[in-house]
Length: 431
Image 1 (cartoon, one colour):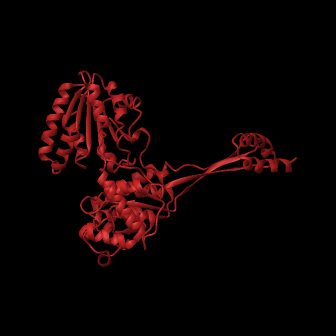
Image 2 (cartoon, one colour; image 1 turned 180 degrees about the vertical axis):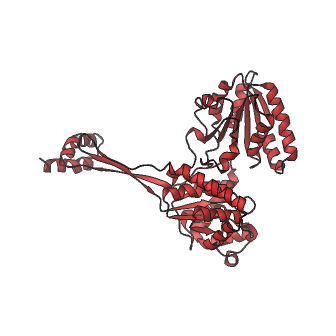
Image 3 (cartoon, one colour; image 1 turned 45 degrees about the vertical axis):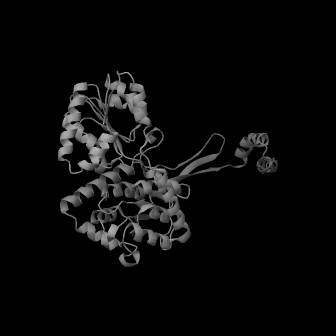
């Protein structure tokens, strides 16, 4: 963990290095993923089966390619009632939030008599990647599947690895609750390729979303253009802006809530109190001593963590914008004042009693968010990621007479006489 102070000489260079530090996939991953995608594209399901035998250690001809809807329904019914209630609550809140994102069609006629508008429609099919085995996240399944269903996607296809044939019942229960239509027992870059290009019994989709390891993220990047994707996801990150009125144990826990995800995660604290910074650093060590995921969290904290002391919390806002973090917590009495000054963040958590972890599960907004400073230009997953807009226009003779001459002039100016002629012929007919 590094500690910086904006008043120290060399701060600007040190902070720039922090901002520019990369934690992305290596060139080896890029090369290996390209080979996997090529094999699946050329050999279809035979390649998928071979990669599954090699990487997940089971034979799809024995374990089965698909998990039937009845198995998902049974997994949901068998849940502990308290856990089922928690999953139901999360699903209901996620659905309610995303239903407000559905865009409205437009259709109007302007002063020139031209009919204009746009029509929104869902994609036909969407693919959802869900990590399998022990690293299984039913919350991410809900966050990806429910917006797709709210958008109106008719065919929602889930792929999930089952290492050694192991199936995570909680993920299957979430699939049932979210209304997933197909569940395939495949994972890794080969599953992304199968969704993009199709592979025998697996029909291709139009959009692929969902979290995964570096190979999955790189595979999504490489198939973009053949299909749409949610985003190129990198390591998770959290920035906490906190004053000394916060309990240092709360702040330490908030920082570690992301650090336990992966050794590449980044957790950063901004505070205007140097003594508080020291106290938080000490409590982080205390928390790591009792955290079951300490091995991962400690590596992430020591390699990528930072505590930055600023002259005022207002002064932290431009620094936060440079980081453009995935998650931003504003743990102060008046979070709105700071929120108004922040331009770039994936999702913002307002106030001392709004830990980021609430947003991961039951709050409602999507937790699939841009990482790696991409919040400068990208947004979190939404209903719009599963929809496309078709514009339309309609002219009658009078409207064409109004707009046609300018069109002809511009087409000739661009050296496109056929464009001009397609309009000019109609203008002569309308005289």
